[in-house]
Length: 113
Length: 116
Image (tube, one colour):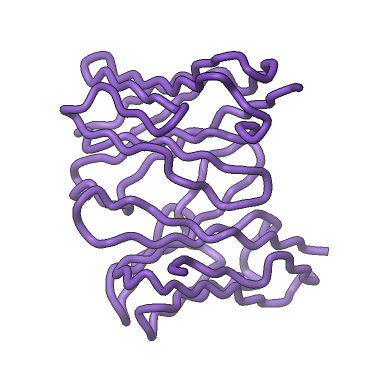
């Protein structure tokens, strides 16, 4: 079945460590996105990519990095520069243009110990 | 600044009852409005997408309305079921982004609990 796969589902990290969250889609969508969700807040855009080898910063890009080497993959690295990385991270994709309906993965919960 | 406000913040109703969730927005220029359902610990799933010209859209027991003049939307759930327990998120897209997903403003969601 077509969809978006995020891994791992749960991740624990010590302070000062970088971690990479995986996001793979087989929907043949051009655009991919990373959002962060904190309790009591709306989703906030970290990075997005509309085409391979190109990506743009969202509202809260500081302390994060991404790559888009393949259409299907958009990994997110949470670096040690991110001061408060504990959160639920959601990857999404959409067809370019039109209504831009978002299809979300199941999320990755990162906890910093 | 574009904003999306949802009310109530949380709601508890008995199984079988109806409920209505509200969404007010200040996004301009408006492109479309979406409602998502998010089960605890999972990714959001789209319920409806409404453009400027649509004022009602249904998806099973879910009916969304849109009043573009007053910049208000509602999501009505009929004959609630235990599986409706979730957060419901209102999302508005602005036209400056071409209506695409990179110009979205998310509400904080309404947390709905259905009790047996």
